[in-house]
Length: 202
Image (cartoon, rainbow, N blue to C red; front, side, top):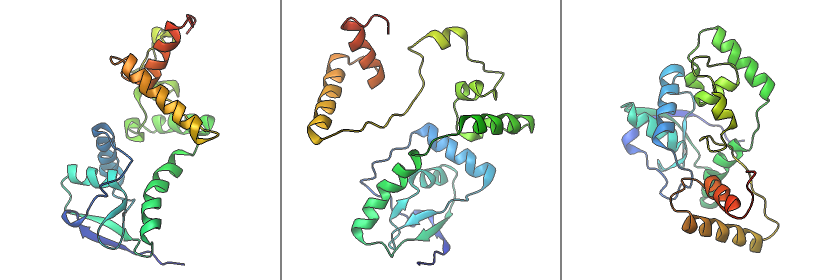
C-alpha cells in the first residue's frame, strides 16, 4: 500500500489539468472558500508528481481567491498516465453518485440550526434549507411550490442501453437548444417541447 504524505507547496507552482471536465462556477468557488475559512483547508490537493493537479481544482481556485500562498498537497506519483487521467474523472463522478438519507440530513440541519451554526456554509440553496426546516427567514412560498418553472436543480443519471441510444439523446438535446434558444436549461427546453406537443398538464 502506498503511504501518502501531506506536503505544503506554493500555489503558484501548481498546474491545473487543462482537460479537466468538471467545471466550478464562481458561486461554488465562493462556497468552497467560505468552507475553508470556517473549517480550515482540510482536504489536500492531489498532485501527479510534477505539480499537476489531479483532484482539487475547486479547492485550488478557492485558495487563489483567498490569497493563500501555500496549500496542503498529496503526491500521487505512483499513478501512471492512464490512471491519473482516469482518476481525475472518477474522483468527481464517484462523489456525486452518493445519495442523502433525507431524514437524517434534515435532523442534522435542524440540530445545527439549534446550535446557531451558519447553515449557508453547508452548500445548500436557501430553498433546500427551508424544505429541511433550516431557514425560516427564507420559506418556500406557496406559488413556488406550485410553479413548475422555479429555478432549482435535481441531478439525474441517464443510463443508455447502447451507443446509438446515447447519440439519439444528444441529437435531441441539440435540437432542443436550436429550437428554444431563449431557454436557459435542458429541463426548460424539454418542458417547452412537451407543452408544444400537447402535454398541456405539464
